Image 1 (cartoon, rainbow, N blue to C red):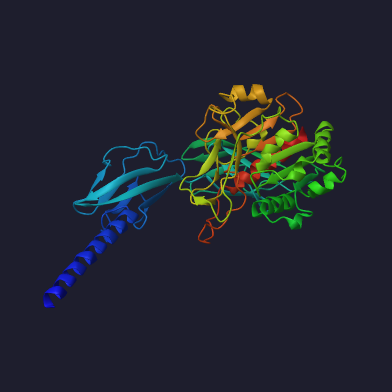
Image 2: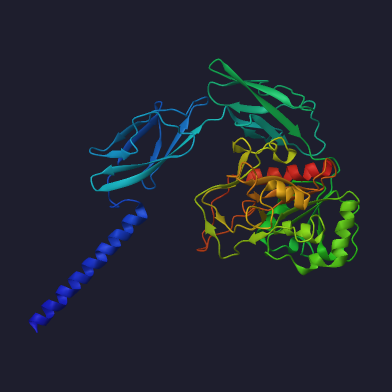
Length: 465
C-alpha cells in the first residue's frame, strides 16, 4: 500500500511539474520574454537630451522632441541594467522618423522595446469663432470650414504656438480669409510658411442622405447612424430620403448631392435595383445631380450604368458583429499624384500623398467594396482600369504609390467636366468603432477627422461641379 502511494505521489509530482513548466512557457511567450518577473532592462532613454517615457509593461518608449528637431540621425543615450546588451546595438546615429525596435538581452532573459518619436507641431491650436482648424505639418497647411454664411473678410484667429515659436499674422489680428492666407512661423532664426484656407459650405446646398429605412431615425446600423448624424450636424440643408420614397416618385430636383453610405450588408438591398429607383437616379444624374457612394454602396455604380456592365467593384468582403478584429497597424490610403485634388485638401498626412483613416488598436469590420487590379478583372493596372471603367482612380492602399494595386477612391466620368460621382470603398473608411467580440469598447479612432474632412470635401467638390 505504501509503495502504491509513493508511486502515485511521484506521478502526481511529475504531472504538476509539467503543468507548471507549460504555464511558465505560455506566460513568457505572452509577455515577449523568458521570465515575466525579469528586471527592467532599460533604465533610461534619451534623444538629444530629451528623456523618453518608458512603459516597462509593454516595452513602449515615447519621446516628444521640440519643434524643429531633426530626428533623422540621432545617437540615442541609453542606460541598461548591469550586464544587459541590445540588438541592434544603439551606439551610432539612427533615424527615428518611424518607430525603432530593439531587443535587450540580459543573460538568458530578453525584452523587446519600441521607440516612437514625435516632433512638436509649431502650432498647438488654431481656432476661429470656436471652430478648430486642421493643421498639417507635412503639407504646411491650416484648413477649416466655418458655418454657412460666415463673413470671411474680417476674422480673428486665436492661435496657440509652441514655446520659442512666433507667428505672423499674430493671434487675435483681424485677417481677411476670402483667399488663402500665408502665416509665417519663426523659430531659432528660421522661418517657414503655412498656408491657411478657410471656407464655408456651398450656400444653399441640399445634401440628401439615402437609406433603406423609412425615416432617418429608423436607421439601425451604427456606422450609417454615425455618418448621418455628422451630415445633419454640419450641413444645414441636409435631408433624409428613402429608397421607398424614390420608388414612389419623390421629387429629387431640389437636391444637389445624394449620399448613400451603406454598411449593413455586403449585398445591396433589392429595393436599390427596382427599375423605378434606378431610372429616377439615372435621371437625377442626367439633370445635373451628384452622387457620393461609400462603403458597400460603391457597388451601385454597376446598376446605375456609371460603369459598363460587370465593371463594378470586383473584391467585396467584410465582417459583421460580433465578428471582427483588432489590428496593430493604422490603415490609410495613398493618393500620390493627386495631392492637389480638392477632396484631399487639409487631410492630416504621414507623408506626401498619404493619410491614415483608421488608427491602430481599433476594432474593425473591414467593410470593403473596391477594385482589385493586378490579377482580377483583366485590368492589370490603373491605366487598364481607367480605360475599361471610364473613371479616374484617385487613391489606393497606403503602400501603393503608383495606384496600380487597388482602386479605393474614384470619380466618374473620366472627363474634364461633369465629374458627378465619387466612390469611397475601402475598409478604413469606418465611421463607428464597434465593441470587440468580448464586449469591450474599442479605443477612439484619432483619424476620424480625416474621414469627416474627406467626406465634407467630396460633397463640396461634387456640389461645385
